[in-house]
Length: 324
Ligand SMILES: [Zn+2]
Image (cartoon, rainbow, N blue to C red; front, side):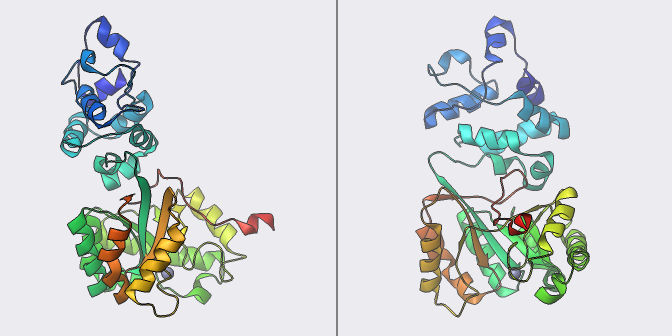
């Protein structure tokens, strides 16, 4: 069993051989079963205590990906630490399988072990930062609640607020590329102009935070009047280099007009529409956005919040350019 091998667990006897075909996490497991299965994965309890019909589920592929990239003992210890007292669902196992080595390095195993049972998933995303005060205020709220999000940053502000940029990374959030200078006319003048700005932003983020960002978000989104005509070429080029872009499917509309915190929350809830999978757009440079964060997260408490990573199927606007 490669899972066992990857975790350094030795298995003996016929029963164990039979268990090789059983995966790690319960497909339809209740919380108790999931916890038990987790212990099972670590070889702490035997198969005889597994509830009937509740199968475990970590595939060989998943463990091979993880095991192939990192030290066995290190991973084993990390998973134990992160999973201690938590529940694991089949859906999480699936994400684990899909996680690429880069995401694991960026986000650690924890990103793939967060409780998921019966919760909808939301990816909070913040564009246009970092700013000084407002980004820090948002980071405070997220830290207090143990929530990790994604920040698509602007290179010139990363240089201006390097401590905040580093704090984003240190506190486990995903840092992605927005641009170096947020100027539509320059960015979308040509694919070459966009790529040149993108490379500068990528380099800046790396130099300041040490992270090789793999995710990006188009300023204004992938389909706008600004980007139409050049977006297709930009996507082809950057995807061929392994970058993934994310648009959004819900928004605070915090850059449209000047809204009160209450109005921002109303916009968010209206656009979220109680969907199962939400990428929510907000802007961490804005004071009102920072001010509404506590209340917003209270209103979205039915969602499990996660940072984006390269293993997640992206939310992308329709590629109009592909249809001419
Ligand atoms: Zn922007």
